[in-house]
Length: 96
Image 1: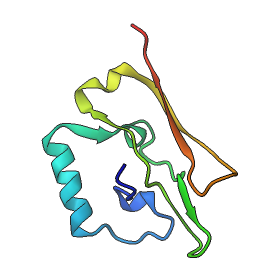
Image 2: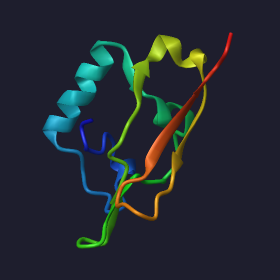
Image 3: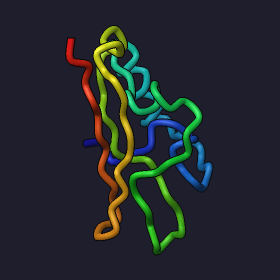
Image 4: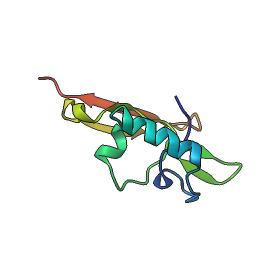
């Protein structure tokens, strides 16, 4: 659980991604991992965390998987939660 946005799209503030996050993304690419939610929703602007103090939202929760295995996943989504500042992610697997 990294608790960081992996892309600029994952922040409502459109703050740029810093070098540490770029380095993490490079490492994920090197080991053939991807953010499964982003693979299924390349243009989505849904978020998993809201900061009332800053008035911003971010998608800082991720399910990572191998790019090679994306066909094993049926769908993924965000489950809103009214009792917490974090929302849950769900991933449905293909049953083959």
